[in-house]
Amino acid sequence: MGKTYERIDGRLRAFIEEQPLFFTATAPLSGDGTVNLSPKGLKGSFVILDELTLAYLDFAGSNAETIAHLRENGRITLMWCAFQGPPNIVRVHGRGDAVFRDDPRFEELLGHFPDIDTSLHGLRAIIVVRAELVRDSCGYAVPFMTYDEDRDLHGKRFAREDDESLSAYFAKKEHIATSLDGLPGLPLPLPPSSV
Image (cartoon, rainbow, N blue to C red):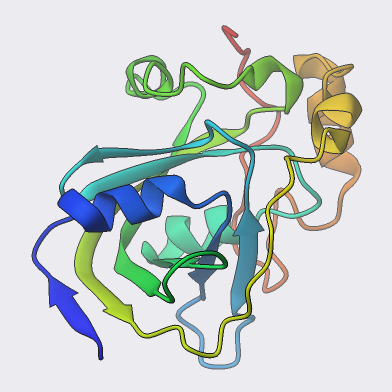
C-alpha cells in the first residue's frame, strides 16, 4: 500500500507536477492552537527545486496562518491527491520557510516561476519546503473529479492593487499580521515588489 521515498524524482515527481491542486497543513506548537489546512492552485505557482526541496508562491488572502506557523516552528506537510487516473496520495512532511520580498533569496527563487504573472495575485512570499519524509498511500477513497481550468477571480481581484494598497488591505484584515492564535504573521507594510 504505502511507500516511503528517499527523494522526489521519476514517477513521483511527475505525479506531483501534474496535479492542479495541493494542500498545505501547519500548526502552532501550542497543543490548543489552531491547525491550518489550505488548498493551493494556480498553474505555475508551484515548483520542485531539487529532489528534496519544493516551493510555492504565497499570494494575497484573508489570513496568514501558514506563514505564522512557519515563522514559529517550521513544520509543514504538503499533500497531493489523484482525482484522475490511478489512485494515489502523496505527502511531503518537512520544514518550511517563508521567504519575504525583502529577503536576498527572493529574486533568485522567483526566477523558478516563469509561467505565472505574479503581479496579478498580490505576491506576499515564497514558501520553501525541505522534505524530511516523503510517502504515498493508496487513495482508493478519493473520488474521480475533472479539472476544467483555474479560476480567474483571484487575479481579477488583486491585479488592481499596488504595494501600498495591498499593505493597506492586509492591515485591515484581522489575521494577516497576527495569526488566529496571536503569533506573528506577515510583516507589514510589505516591502516594495520588483515584479
